[in-house]
Image 1 (cartoon, rainbow, N blue to C red):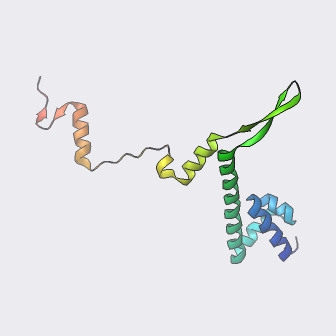
Image 2: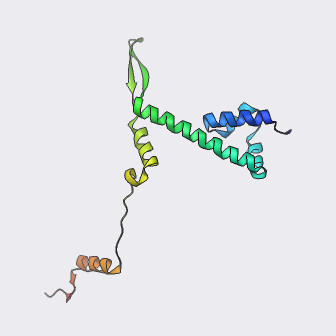
Image 3: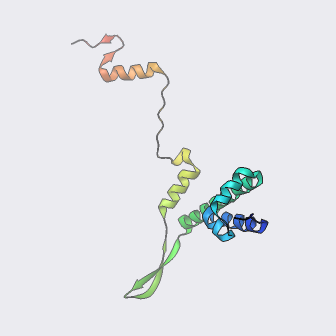
Length: 139
């Protein structure tokens, strides 16, 4: 394959910023993905522009997901094969996923357990085993 032109690079980065999809941006610009990965390794400016375009693509996707979560989208309603109205749909899973991604400390499913040291663990183990601080329980 010949050298990638400045116009091709510009078209690639513009499309990549819109879609976040390298293969689609390559098709749009008229070169293959291998060229992108080769350029990323050999050209610092290209690598930086690639990272920025990918980040912009993620931001575009995030905005679209947020729009769908908050404002929904319209779908036609049919009765006996004839459109009789529209309904607005919302995807609450998108809202939850965005909250988890943007505020994991608040919305993450994982629980964090901490202890203050081995004495606390020993006390817990002793209580589970029925052992008091004074020694084993007497019968």
